[in-house]
Length: 255
Image (cartoon, rainbow, N blue to C red):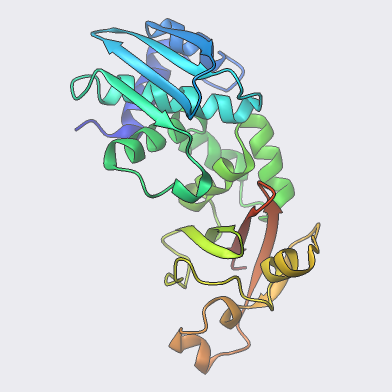
């Protein structure tokens, strides 16, 4: 199996890509032998039909948010590069954020490929330059790489300087998490209720949005952690933002 990140870097090398302004995703796809069509798919974001070294990619014409469209294209390119010998057709159902980590290995591999294609780890790390983590920094990175805030936060979890957990909450319940290897707390119950005495709790219960990161007691998010029972004053930074009428992202990190 080809390593997804290595495969994405090889695409950069083949095309002479060095930064996000070199080519659009459409141009990259075309250079690889992929024809992109905008169609009203209905129930899907994208699909790709592969025939040897060529393919036809269909993108749902209702996708108007450019960063989301970029990720869908990059994801389908991932299938073309990684999985052309496995199946001729890949169709992405209308993934919600709550399904992000519930897909099979081929979908996760295509996501890993897309992340590296859009936000190469080496460039991502260089641009961070140990700057303080907050939503303004991630917005800046998101603008540079032409990716969504969520995709950029998720990339930070694998490439950033500060230990980070990204949590998706929908309808007041934790649906998934992504955590960096160095984040001190790993266990968070899926489908657990959002803790009330947190920034996420204020957003969900009071619709109270904070422009800047806030310090919160870590034990509020991780009440079952025995370490925190010995050190209940341990704090984390937290910042949240909405992604849909019922869903939002909470990001937790250490100093």
